[in-house]
Image 1 (cartoon, rainbow, N blue to C red):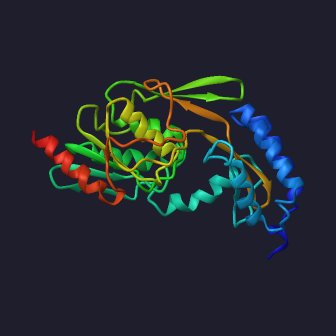
Image 2 (cartoon, rainbow, N blue to C red; image 1 turned 90 degrees about the vertical axis):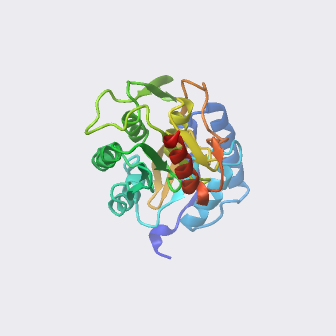
Image 3 (cartoon, rainbow, N blue to C red; image 1 turned 30 degrees about the vertical axis):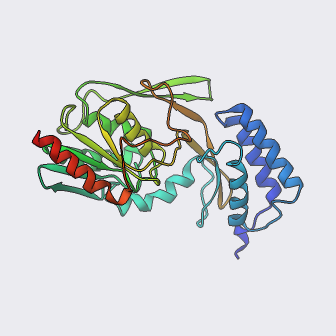
Length: 301
């Protein structure tokens, strides 16, 4: 073990408690979690000197109160920068470069149905706008579209709005986000103009999900489902609707803390804890074939 991967638990716990108290979207739960971490530390539960092991122990406790999957103490094998949010950006850059910008597959299936796979993430829009626009414009000529989110673990809400803009004809309110900082709410809308051609708001759209689909990928499925714009096919998703921010608390540890919560304008709620419920439930492994059959049948009607 190298020296830098060793950790002094007390310092990490104190800083994590401070960040929870100041930033977690649910202040009452933050107080409960802060007391839990302090008590567990006093009991010796975190008496380890390995950063990865400490991350595992603390994350389990952070999620024990309300099951928030965005709450964690994340371990990074490489040393991470101190700038807020920089650890995640650095860790996902390689995924972006090796996945064609998050669009690893665009294919025309039988019957004029396009398949668009978005994985492993919806990357920050300032990175991904160009590959997303190219793929969506290419798929715009198809008669139906299948968006595959089965292997997507989340990402940027702005990318969600960008993608939805290609699948709608008019500017549409997609989601609202409540932020604890400033006790404010921001609305997310589809864009009135997009680069390239739109798929449009009338042709069939199917979205594939699995029990690995998470966070912003869930928002994409949920927003389109609530608008009646897409049929969701596959498995119930993981259930994480709280946008998070990251703070480096050790050269290899990042405190991931949700700072807001989604509020859908149609349902008045979100998918936190429940996941996105598919319209057509089936095993994720068979979701593509199922959606393709449904799309072809719809086009033949």
